[in-house]
Length: 413
Image 1 (cartoon, helix red, strand yellow):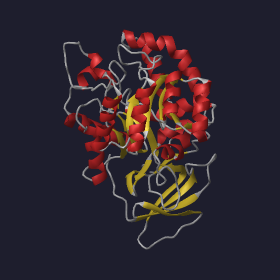
Image 2 (cartoon, rainbow, N blue to C red):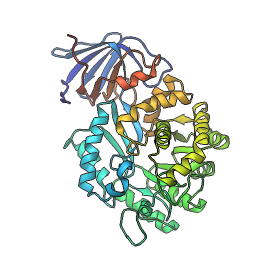
Image 3 (cartoon, helix red, strand yellow):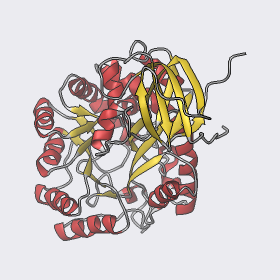
């Protein structure tokens, strides 16, 4: 895909628009982009001399999408061998995946963990931010912090006689604090922890909590002291409650969350990132006999409860942010999360907000996820009305990031 650098000043004519905050489309509008930001937005905007004009009259224009849960340097389909790749290999493959995903409209990604003893996602984030390479904006938690035998302890994929430094379990408050401080030292934006087991890791169980309360509190307190928000991979309802009590900013997956935990999230303002398309991918793989026996057994046991939990989340007042867990399944399927959210019970407008305004709130960013003067010009568009037909989110054919045009619709013959 050819990348075209945007002119310093661009005027976009929008057939319709969604501002990232509303419950409905806002109708036709014009957007003036200058120096990488939205300078004006309204029925008509200025036409500075030499401004480039982009006509998206048949399209709905939205803020760039934000995926709050990806793994650019993990490949679940080949995890036990891919984990052994060099940090450079992981970063280079991750860069390609990030740019492919950018072409689908995802201008900001929160990467929640590399299983590498080095810091490939930090290097990748920094290279993109410096303009050394092109790609979507990255917000990074470099590694997963967890106890021995937890979902973060991926060394369980290998025989006990292999001592590979691909995970560094922490089993005491002092060890936990050391790991959080190390994440801060080397530049993580977030801390990622696991407080229950997972489905794709052997020897642990999503229905079982793996941190004691005082261990989880030590992690969250250390992160808070360093001004790092905490994202928690969690499954069991008690794991969700523990994460909320200890001050986590986001619950990732929340596979087995119950009504009490959802009420706690509503009251505390804790975000939930429910990764609903991941469940659809898992169920399809289960039906096709593609899962390992230990993964298949756990998913077969929990599938209906996971779907019920997703319906609970969808009908709640909790703050729901868009996240996919791409890397655990192909990035080319990441835009299907919109459809999975709506199928679970979210309105199309709320699903769009989850990937724009609400996701920006989760990241504590007021300059992305919205169409307003002063915001960064991360702008995407698709033909038609995605609130009327959420499947149109898979048809994004215009992408601008930071005022630079990345992708444009094919010209009419």
